[in-house]
Length: 116
Length: 113
Image (cartoon, each protein chain N blue to C red):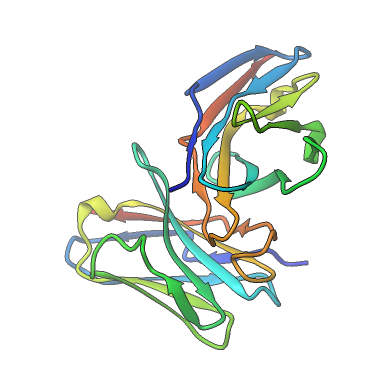
């Protein structure tokens, strides 16, 4: 079946602009995660959704970052007033049951964000 | 707090030779352990996981990993490397009762012909 999809695959924006990144999880997966991958920082957890609620937002680096999930499916990560240090690959993952289960997280291909 | 260490930035091995990519972890309780592989410009692909039971876990593409509780390690192994195994490998841990994965920095595996 279809895996996790993300769009756009690449995004180039100017410093100070807002961007929206989209994630479509595997159908039926209730848990959804956002991570950021950057040189020197490795893979960082950003936020976790269970259904439409976000019990763990501890990884969001600043209040410029926000995310929502609607209908228990698609999620959007929004970065306001982008800065050059926001340049990274943003990865989305989903798992079948709650984040507390033993289920595997499956990752999408990522969105490469470049802030000029 | 949970953490993972991958002590090698890069591992070089000749095709046909066995390979090992090292991973050690730190958790307060019991761990769930995972290995993922990332090919250039691609997302992470799941290889295998340890949840409980047999310490030797077999996964995709002929990879296996051994959970060693006393050494807090979960090294990834393959008996005979292929050039196509060249990629970036990530070890990850999730402590029982927590919802998020913590990843190591990654190890680049280069398999030469």
